[in-house]
Image 1 (cartoon, helix red, strand yellow):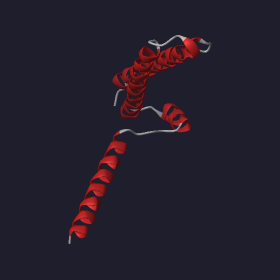
Image 2 (image 1 turned 135 degrees about the horizontal axis):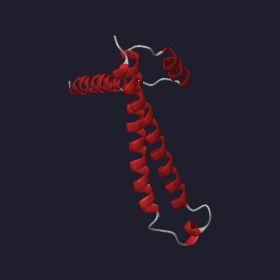
Image 3 (image 1 turned 90 degrees about the vertical axis):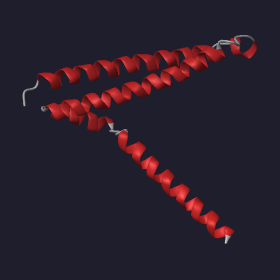
Length: 125
């Protein structure tokens, strides 16, 4: 009897986990580079511009999260710059470069999103 209860509980947990994962993946739409280029070429309506702006905002947030985690890693690595960590290329330099890259990409995504938000507000229905 206990075995059946454990199996039922495990199946319930699995089903809830799958439903949550599906809901999370539905919120963050991922497009390929070709799809984004096609969307950018075909965009002429307010809804299309808003969809592009939302996509670039989500990419901006993802890059900002990566930048924050890399900043923490950079700070952690900057505590030890002696011994093998002092040789070039230093791990602290690698983290700094990755932080700067993610910050730059977040800024680029923000500019793209602002551009499409501006276009969506100027288009007349």
